[in-house]
Length: 92
Image 1 (spheres, rainbow, N blue to C red):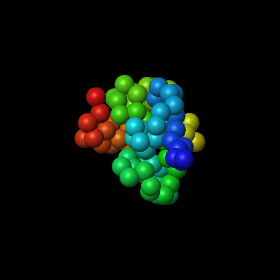
Image 2 (image 1 turned 90 degrees about the vertical axis):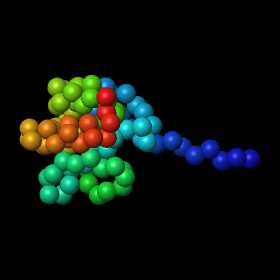
Image 3 (image 1 turned 180 degrees about the vertical axis):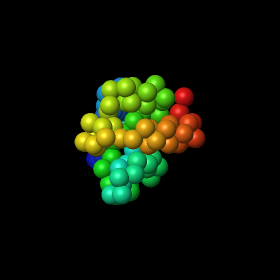
């Protein structure tokens, strides 16, 4: 008898679709109120998830998905930095 493991699912804050956690990028709010991309998915802090596409990132910015997830205002500089990091990760 084989044991099936439960696959963790998370919701993208851009397209609002439920997807496998490993398919998404985790955006982290550190205790110092900085917003960074958590490549390992294991860093401490509040996290929000995005698909690996620029269209989902733009939808999250437009719908204020990060503000909703973190329950605080996100500075414009943080969005610009996250956009650069997503491009470096190969987001389309």
